[in-house]
Image 1: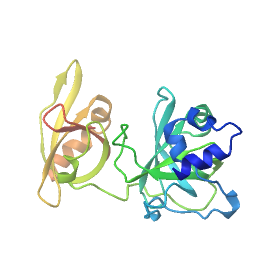
Image 2 (image 1 turned 90 degrees about the vertical axis):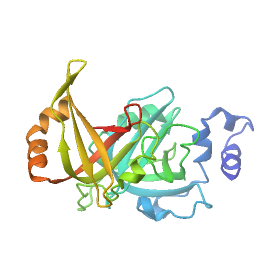
Image 3 (image 1 turned 60 degrees about the horizontal axis):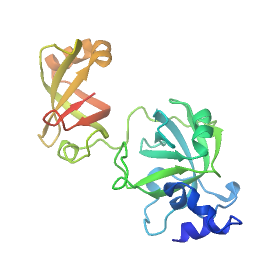
Image 4 (image 1 turned 90 degrees about the horizontal axis):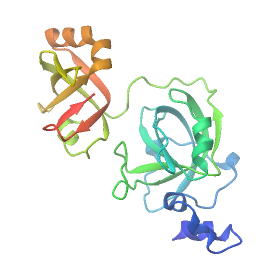
Amino acid sequence: MAASSAVASSNSSPTAAFTQPVSELMCVPTVPNPTTLRFVLFDDIQDVNNLPQVKSVFARVVVKFPRRRNSQHYILQDITGSKIEAISNGINVQRFDALLTQGCTYTLYRVAFCLNREELQFRNIGHGLELGLITHTIVDPFTKPIQFPPFPKYLMPFHEVYQQPHKTFIDVIGIVLHLEPLKHIGGRPYREAVLMDSRWDLIIVGVWTDLLQRNALRWSLARVDKNIIIGTLLRCNHNHSNVFCA
């Protein structure tokens, strides 16, 4: 309710606030001057009873999803490798679509940390929070001499993978126990690999055309040598006997 009141008070008409997207209403508290905002890591925000919070972050755009209706989603990674989903809504969609490029890093001032609303609307990754790219958000190029890690901070145990919603993205690590022969499904090359994690749990990873061709030698060597591999942004697929497709 506090967020709604703050938005309503900034408009001359008391009904103007209700014309904004719900997520924008929930993610727009009173916004301080950007020079007074301290930079935080995604995992620094722990007090869920004190949200939304407007902060500044350094972030890399790992995935930029296509615009959908009146919103656009991004997966961001901070300098520790932690990931979070960021969302723009309404009139902000076009602005951030032009400002943010997949694979690039940015300094983002005045982003709003909000509770994840996955129970009401699909989210691409699991996280307790999400970022609102709001009207007050400022985007600058990232110029600090800080190296972003090549791998994610959190690698999900396989027993948690099975609990994730359908089509969400996950990051895992495991040893290759078995590699199925090459198949063709709908004219597309397809291959399945069985991975085991440190808890001895198993998952099946289905690998399709582009990734299969690009990493064919790596998969073959992994099977022979029982290599440990890291799979990032694998997508859960509960429609095929809990097969997780890359």
